[in-house]
Length: 67
Image (cartoon, rainbow, N blue to C red; front, side):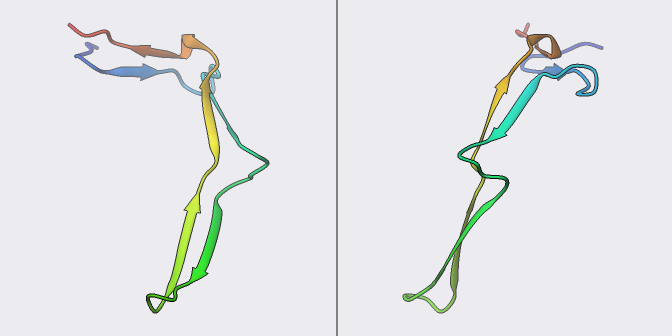
């Protein structure tokens, strides 16, 4: 297999732990807020995920430096 410029490969997650993610501030999933609209007829919905990621082992990823 040949890699062209700007390609990346990663290992099977079952073989090596490469990237880990965790929710922040005790959040366990999506955070949703709703507000009844005054300027418009409807409901405003805001949703977000508070989490972070970190590479924990470099051996599970490879990025081709390019030709």
